[in-house]
Length: 152
Image (tube, rainbow, N blue to C red; front, side, top):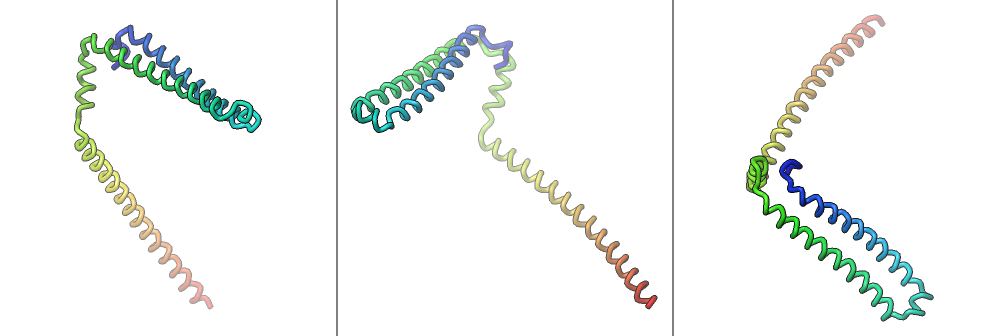
């Protein structure tokens, strides 16, 4: 979907999803730091196992609630998008997306085979060039050998 055909209401959802992403990263840092704090022997001894697990459970619940909110916002954005008719550009992109997996695999294989053939041709050209260079060098060596042996 290009920016011209995108409904203006989606901007709100995009910004909310970005804010949730930032919250998720901060909750991840909080989770890591909480694990570090609770792993210290003095702290875990004072709090006890049950309190440590309760705290970790709260963080996991917070993480799960953020994921649920993220999913709800994505569903809402999808509902808003469905209210707008597709444009010609969207239909073309849908056709491109609807190509079968097998067609993509076949096209990829053909492209790889073409590249291999091009590389083989390049290697053959290099090989024949080296062969010619070796012949020239061999001829020069034999010439010098005959010349120096003849002078002795």
